[in-house]
Length: 116
Image (cartoon, rainbow, N blue to C red; front, side, top):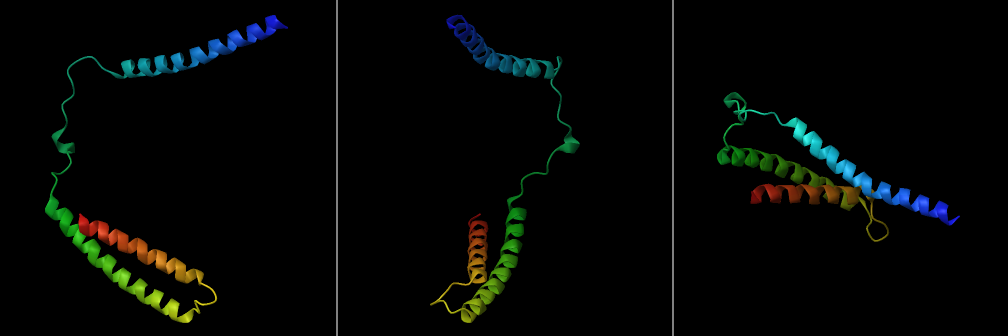
């Protein structure tokens, strides 16, 4: 019985030691095979991304903010109507809570765009 336990434990320890070593070796071999000898490749100037233009980004953000403000105004009106329909002393309306969450989410989005 002790011999069987000892054999089992030795196989288990070997597997625990061999598995990470095999994974590391496999990854290192794949990285090595992926490299090609020779000069490094030059980037293709046609595939370069356009240069970073902060003015265009600010203009796009401004348009998005205006659209989001219009949506926020509409949602706030819908929320107001929902609050007027609901008797909040007894229960809270699920649509009212959902509208409030939408308003909050949109307001945070507008604030983050305005902050830049």
